[in-house]
Image (cartoon, rainbow, N blue to C red; front, side, top):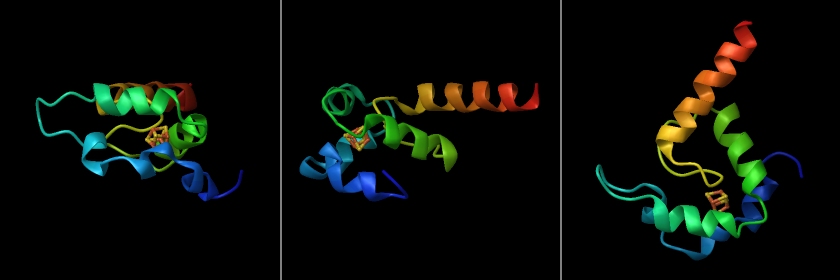
Length: 79
Ligand code: SF4
C-alpha cells in the first residue's frame, strides 16, 4: 500500500469522526475498539508517526500513547 491509499480501507470512514478526537477528558475507548478491527491499522499508525500527528486516535493508539511513541522514536533516531 503506497501513499495514503490505505485511507480508502479505513474503518473509521464508516463511523463518527468525532470519536477519534474526543473532547478533553473524553474517552478514546470507542475509537480504539473500531481500530482493533481495522485492516489498515499499521499503515494508519505509521502515517501518524511519520507526519507528527499530536491529536486524536490513530492506528488504535490514543494521543498520549502516540506522543510517547514519537518521543521513543526521536530517542532511537538520536542514538
Ligand atoms: S486504525 Fe483506526 S484511526 Fe486508523 S484508519 Fe483504522 S479505524 Fe481509522
